Image (cartoon, rainbow, N blue to C red; front, side, top):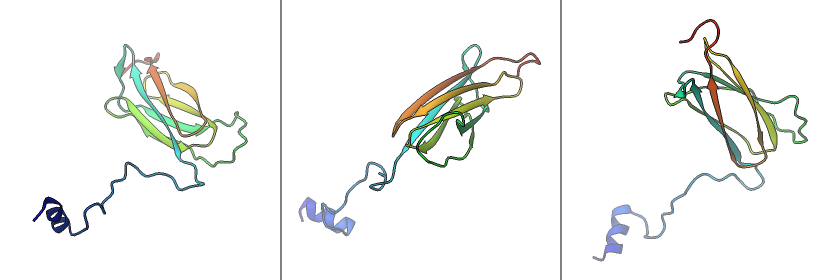
Length: 131
C-alpha cells in the first residue's frame, strides 16, 4: 500500500480533502473587529495585576458611523495585560484604569478599521498609601 493510500485509509477521507483554516474571517459585507490591548504598570515599572480597566465609546467624539458598543470591563492579568475586541468601524474610545490606593488614569484610543492599538498605563501610588 502506498503512503497516500495509508493516509486515506487511516483518516477515512480522500487525501487532499482536508483543509486547515488559519482563522475565522468575517462574512462578506460584515465588518471584522479591532483589538485594543495594553499593559498596566505600577511605579517603578513593574506589571500591575488586578487593575480594573473600563472601555467605553467616547461620547464627546462625533462619529458618523452608527455602531452600538456597550461599556466593557476587564481586569489586568498577572502580567498586567488586558485586551478588548471592538467593531472595526471608525470610533474613538475612552479607557479608564483604576486600582485601590493608586491614582486613576484615562486615555483615548481611535479605531479606524481592522487594526490593533496598544496602550500603556503607569499607575502611581495615591496619597492614602500604596498596596
